[in-house]
Length: 624
Image (tube, rainbow, N blue to C red; front, side, top):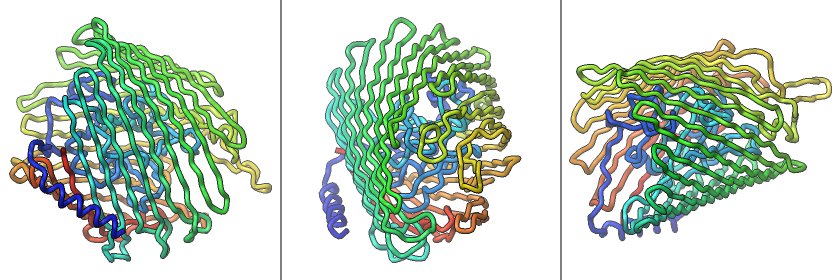
């Protein structure tokens, strides 16, 4: 640890002498009336013409979160709860959106689906991501399977990675150190180290971006206990782009991430000398050929994830997936946009033997943008799966925009269906496999409005209702012989809720954002899903060089399971306050300090597991 501190201090001393040429403006929380969104249609449309209240996290906002994980940033947005993001660094994440579970949230990286076919949830592990590689994030909530396919039932997390944009060579170095302590251990020992470097170069038609990062944490025990559970992550990426001419460009990218973490025994819950390793290799090719009013887009990716668990019951999983997505975008005129495409996925996992599924989905999307305020986004997809056959999903998303004296107000509605395919573990895995499973089906209805003002105010309110059919559960089919199996359950499960978002600039250089989420279910919410959640942030920029923010988060009571007694336990609500300050010493060098959980709130995120108390982080960013 002392060596890491010395390295950090040495970098700090060297970098303070760097001369000034570059400065990144802080614009977190600013209301941009001409904002463009992409994820809900795959076309770059003005926000007022989008039928969704898309959550946009810009590069400037991401810069304010240096030292935090992607999961922590997303967890501050409406409608989403990422359980595990406030715990030990190696803790698994569970993403809940609109009352749904892990399997109902899809992650895309550069417009390509990513997942882990070997895991029970099939969910992509957000811990694999390095914030320094990301340009921006968009989040759309609700059913989006027609455009993006399997698992896009409650939310889509649409991530765009960085590319080299300007001629010349430049580099960015980010480094931070911090504590990693619980509420009961406030010794303030440095236990978390994070470093990242990004190098980009561009000349004429060729662009290259390479990045690498490392994180090491040695502080918290996973389960409540005395020993600390180590976590480390090493990642790297190379992105190569070539613009052959005005019509044709190709991008090649490769990503590698290796994670290692200690973890504790889950049954019974106790300190244990267990550990796991996760290794991801991902290769992607994207190309765009433009012709007349259209373009042909081709995305191809190969993703391999190897996970090894050392415990009383050791295991190893090796999964591979190949994704091909080819679509034609055609703009007839300023009012009519269309997409015709086909998406193919081949997923393979080795259990006792190799198992495989394939799907081939043709899809179509049409967007109408009138000159009198009416906008319509409609789409259709036919899912063809190697195990259960065919499944049709569709969506209709109209909106109407009305100009006002001070801005505009948009009314929106949506009716959409989505699907969640049974994964390889449920179909062929070692525990309760059932090859006759059908896909889960969701139907989502939503309506609301979004108000944008020239006085820098944005307010949106959305009501949603979501019905689940054919949910896949692990069912005890023979209690006498302890035999269980994955099965589609016949009951329909209903969810409803309200999401409210506010962004306002009440004074010059002062930004306020807030969101409120209410979710309920006729059958009670799933474990660890809060009924009510509130996030807010107040930011202030001083003389364009210093930025301060105060964040607040409230999470209501939830229910968790105590597996030692096989009973449910109510977890108390909690309130968290965080502060952040950033100062640009010069145009090329900046410092930040962050204090999370200022009041050292004592709360439980996962029953019998450790949560983070008050923690401090110091960091710097150098632009060369």
